[in-house]
Image (tube, rainbow, N blue to C red; front, side, top):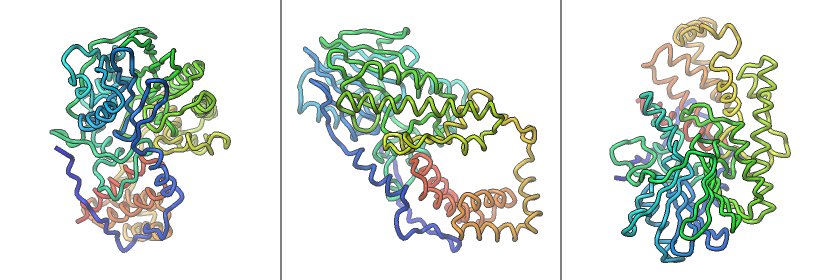
Length: 454
């Protein structure tokens, strides 16, 4: 069953100043990004193709002597079927193997279509710790990441509020029983796994190396075709600043290991690079340049964050201290379409020092309702605080308006006015944010606040 997404025309409040005469530069950049994510079958080497834009994740096909190998499978069976039909216009050789670069559902949810196309065994390869991230959530009993993931993905938004997802087109997942699932129906458990750093295989007569490459996930691998000099990077590389931290919620992603994994690919000097999302890079010079930039940028942010940590900076100070050098920040393949440098900085701090920011005032904070009451007292009462929030919104000081609205909501959860102010503030923040995941999150919560204020 396809996700039912109601079309909601956003009704802005009397306080609102978020309707803009023209797109912000961030909105315009994100709209221009849609061309990068267009549907296409791209040839990246002799007998090597990649389907881009058919599903959130890229799907690769390697044509061997007596069959084909599929690398990642798309998010769901409906996507995989269309992709397989497109591949069948190129070759009718049977599927001999499927390789998962990692366990995220947008890369594994269409596997059944490829595995079940013909009678006979199809090997499904992955690292032995496939889906370690998802399994950790299951063991803990934490489920809120699914709702947060739907907000991050924009899955609860009407189509007119989604542009794209920064590294993927604005596709809605099919939902069977779980309204917050990212992919359903097509996952096939691997029947071939490996534990070590590397496994060299011959699949469909083609030499293929699977190399452990921890980064975005601990189960990540890259696929190297040495004869063709083509590499499939999984989600350790795509044309955007990486999601070193995902706002849906993740354990610490080892940033140093991530950069080292990219560096290992740089050393191969590939002729073509197929990222987990966005269009492939064809040509050794550009491939090495893009990968080197990626590695250097990730290492810079890590090292600069550690430098600030050792100066005693808190996360709130660090996010203004750590900035990419201009030579890297201006490159389109490092713009914050999907991940965000500030979120990476916070994750690095928390991954090494935990939640305590070092300021003793933070050890035992006031409850939100108590702090809100005292803020209202300072403002001269709740009505005065509400007035300040309205002024901030009219001045397009959206962050401050949202923060003041939070205090007002803590004071009186039944009052619709601060909810509407916060909704408009989040909408304004979204208009001025390039990072699609954050933009989607802002707009989804704004939508929920407006509904809750009725």
